[in-house]
Image (cartoon, rainbow, N blue to C red):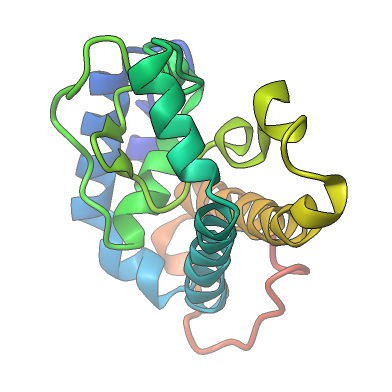
Length: 189
């Protein structure tokens, strides 16, 4: 087992411990991960899918609705503690996508990754991608939500594939990877 995989924090670990592990792993293994033929195919598609679902959220004004709810009603789905659901692998994936992880929480009542302009991560937990409260679903018809839901589905599928590939790479020995082989992203998971 790889040293980094062996000391990976659990899901129950503090977010600071998870981000420290992700950063250490990124610094040591960035080149190997980014040269992996499967991740090379998955990462740009995942980044595009995440961008597409957020674009639909803006088009439907869901991002503004959520911001208003947090600021005016004192509630937020992006509340403190939500970050406990983020795995170290997901944080590592964000680093590989060029996203910097925050060192501290901006809002004491908000998720560790929440900023005044929204989520600071490129790719988020499935719950963050998929959840819409009843205040939103009561105001936006299923037909209007359909393109967003389709984009979210693509993002979640690619996110799953990328995280599973990262997990596999973490336990493989360095020498067993052949960066010159052609790979099907789905079969190689």
